[in-house]
Image (cartoon, rainbow, N blue to C red):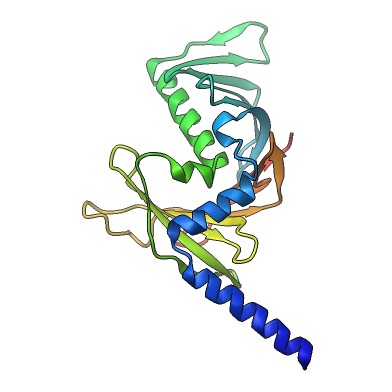
Length: 238
């Protein structure tokens, strides 16, 4: 009985503390969990991601991010086609080749160079979370919600963005005791900023991969919000 009472006191204390947190305080605690030594802004490192999707060959991507030098590189192979994207100081370039044919180069276009910038922003954002929520143009809701998702209760942080950054509304689900990010979810919005409930996706995060002292989710599983349809899995394999 004494043990049960003590446990209830601890749980109540955690609940009260969580309720007292505002958005920025929760974000700071989450960043401390994922970037304990504040290394993100000077991040220089690489990792490999293997992506599997239904009815598609797997894609293996080797990614290099160097934030101090403002450079990014990804070399992705799918079905023997090598696609390389490079970005240096917001200037993108692309290169494609067929590995089945020696020195067979596939012509790239201006759109491919633009996609290099997209890929840089995509990978830097998702694998730089939650630290990237400190970026200019990001608006953190001061109010934290408690939500149950897949049977577990989370502290949920909402983020919106300046129009030139992005129009989606994002929700980040953190474990209420460790502040580890375990889910993120986004929805499209209408012209007035109202969420369209049957749009967007949610991503389940599991495992832990430490890359240059940054704690990243090892596995990401993607689903549609509207019907829970499974879309694919990304795994850090190196």
